[in-house]
Image (cartoon, rainbow, N blue to C red):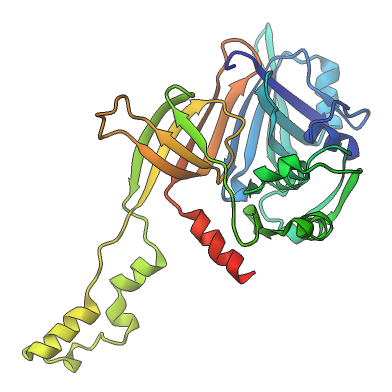
Length: 357
């Protein structure tokens, strides 16, 4: 599978035609955008839980003058999808070209470099980002939500079960993002007992106050290259900060209020001013071959043990915090993902939110 890489880089001014490409239709954009085909290119993409970090750089090798002129004069948007020939591709990046410039490496090699920002940019809140799209009959409810999530660069979680729910007719997605999600929830998801939680960085589908996450398993047999534990000793939660200065927040700064020669007062003082140790957040830096199922906030079970007796290597369940995609569409180029994941019980957090919804 790892040798049958497949990817699509679409550049242009997209309208509804681009949406068909995003949700996997065989229809290709006409006039408004085109597929970069027959040219070698490389990509470096960052996806993060902090959406304003979402960026991409594409380097296209030896484009002809017509391609350069078309992209630099007319092209403003980018859609990039990648995966393998024997399975569905994933939409990795949707964004705008912030800068495009040619470079001459040698008399035989010309490069066109595209530097892109995510569709939403660095500052736009969801209610200021608008979408107009058409999802074809027969596509799934998951395709609709994934389209919206990819368009604004937020992580989609808990919606895997919706892949079996098919649209009985063409569905139009329109309006600002929050409005589009609200309308789809009312028209389709409520009948299933489902709802959506959406924030600036994530979109979570839940049914009957429960969330179902699909975990990706990474081992050396399934494509893991390396995994290294990181303990962030500088991390401090607001609870830790309170405990560190609790005598201030509790109004106990004036030690004259306590007679520490009195045994009972001394015990009370020690109890109220005790400082629990800071609990560092456990994180993991990992690298694996390209996996289309990995997304930001995806639960991932990492097992870097080399044998059953290995007690020092990383093993456990984490949630992806940031991903870096590296690769190209030609032989000899990378096709991998590196990232950081951290211990974070998102299921309990979401269940708590869901109970309040």
